[in-house]
Image 1: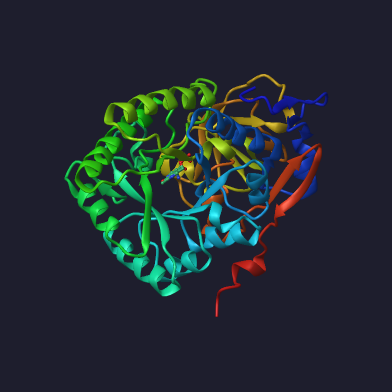
Image 2 (image 1 turned 135 degrees about the vertical axis):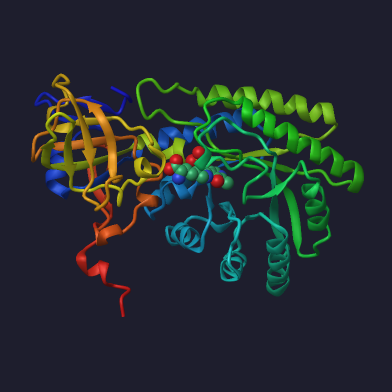
Length: 431
Ligand code: LLP
């Protein structure tokens, strides 16, 4: 099995977090998102423990809410000692509504609206990551209005290509995030920020991309940012006390994806950072990262019920499930790979290939193509693995399909954390 929270029950059903997925599908209906709380906790510890051991005091991993955001997640993150990053008023208010402390939030985003900036300041979020000059000015004015000095990180673009797929590659120079180092604009941006009376520059932020399986691209990015830090220190006497290296490590969607030893990578990174700082005569900053995918992806499984099976003679076979790109747009968007299992007969041998199609009305609305598996029959439960990240958070009401519920699994029990949308919800905003 792809991951240790999966197994096969005596009846051949797929067990997830020790629970029978076919029984869960019956109880809660399909499509259904399941989330294994213990796995979320274990994934948090892959960061919190080495962070405490290897990095300077004050270092903190911030969970990246964009991967998956709903209220019941935040008490878990808090108990595990994580901070959280948010990129919108919606994510911010979700975290706060769940009792997450504002001072452990970091507000990201490349075009926070004036209302969002005001909200963040009013709620006293601990840190803003400022993406651009316009935001710098708006935030300074808002902090002045509130009579506070807002702590900020400055988002720099180091121009690293971490060899990940283009759609989620945010560290290249030519992109819409942050201020580029190579053109000299980052230096000007920092000097400007240091003159802002109502902002306290805590340090620098960079993010180079997602699905990264190695510590080296993070070290390369850190080197570029620390070069800027040293130049600014020489020019303006300022040294950063925080260095945020952006998103976390990659996850395995399929058996042949590499396994990342996250604590080992963090340990290597800490050694490299110490050397880079020493070489530049910089004090060791507190380090942050913003893992999203690696916290929740393998804690999630999506269940569907197989509908029609279509055998296109001489071509291929499709099973159409009762969800699709409305709950998981990642194949349609990125041709993202997934492991798909027949949850009703998880132990059965593969008897051919089948493409898993969704119910949304377009040809590209597939979940996965040509999957070798025990081909589902109508009524059987189909499980798509490793769907905890960027599935629910990217779900839509395309075709006015209702989004599935999220059921949290913990200690052999299950509970609805996000209810299923209803047809009434589909017209709730219509006047
Ligand atoms: N911090 C920043 C500034 C980010 O832009 C991202 C992801 C993260 C943290 C979290 O990175 P992670 O640990 O999850 O790799 N929708 C795409 C992923 C887009 C990620 C964008 N930024 C997908 O479905 O693969």
